[in-house]
Each structure stands twice: as C-alpha cells, then as structure tokens.
Length: 214
Image 1: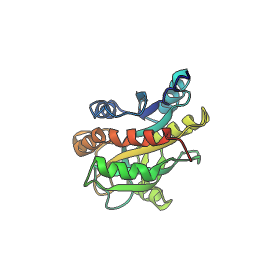
Image 2: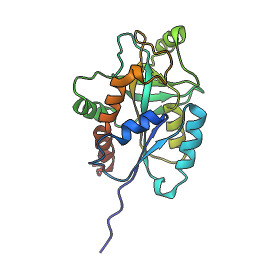
Image 3: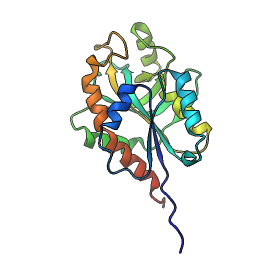
Image 4: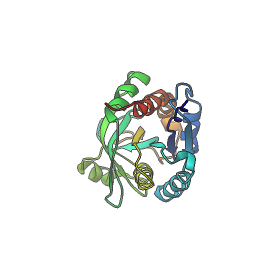
C-alpha cells in the first residue's frame, strides 16, 4: 500500500512581534498542512536573512510562502484595518514577484473579516518608513501600499525554489491617518484585530494550492 504524501507546509512570515502575536492568537484550526509563523525582524535585510535561513530546512523545501503584517497605504481614502492583497510585489531593486491565488484570497478575506475593505494591486517595498511626498510618488507608480519586508520575502522564497507565494497586509498607516511611527500599535488596534482574524483565509488559500489541477 502506498503511503499518502504529506501535505506541503505553509510558511507565514511577518516582521514584528506584535504581528506574530496577532497571528498566534488567531484561529489555528483548519490548516491544510503544517504551518510555521516566522518573525523575520524589521526591514528588508532582516527579512532576507531570516527567510533564506528558514527555507534551508528540508521540511520547508516545498513550502508555500505568505508574507503578512502591517503596511502603509498609499491610496487616498484608505483606513487603518483595510486589507491589501498584492497582485505582485516590487522590490526596491526593481524586482517584481507575481503572487498566486489573489482572487481566492480576496474572497476568503471578505468572508473572514466582513465589512473590511480589501484592496488589490502592486505592493511595493522600501528600506525605510515612507512619508509625505514619497508616499505620493510611490502611489504615482501604481503601487497601492508599501512595506519593508514583503517584496524581499517573496524574492527569497522563489529564489530558493519553485513555490506559490502571496502577500497580504493590513493597513495601519494611511495618507489621512498617519502614525507618529510605523511601529506605533496604539493607533492600529483595529489593524491588530483584523490581522488576528485573517488566518482562516490564509488556510483556505493554502488548501486550494494542495488540490489536484485538472
């Protein structure tokens, strides 16, 4: 009798301890396979080191990778607690990584956090906190949100082997709702609650990748 292959794992990467806390305190049931929540540390260099090191683990050789956490919204009218599903991530070096299963993620996020607005479009990377005119300049490129880790996380993931990747971020800082600093959590309680509620959507995305293709 043949032994069924173990389901492919899911690696969920975030930067901050508060993001990891939100994800770990969320609903952990219903995963389609082994799930690792990785705190990379803040910034692209920390993310590159941490993700690259994690994916050398043979148990994660075929892991799907999803980058998540908080972000700064670029589009006017965005609010803290809005969700951003990346169609692609754009690195500071110009590298572009297409994301997989964005339509399903949008559908499942709407179900997981009803009433929250879900935006789709390019998610751009930066090596510093973006403010003022620079925010407007990035929006003019077509990007709808910016963070410091997603682009590098997905670049490292696909560089280490063929695998599905995605990025979902929760807006904690927006043009009309700027925080004093991106790490300020008091101004992003709604974003924390949203991030804590999205795990079922991530699991549905992962499960969809495990289904046989016709």
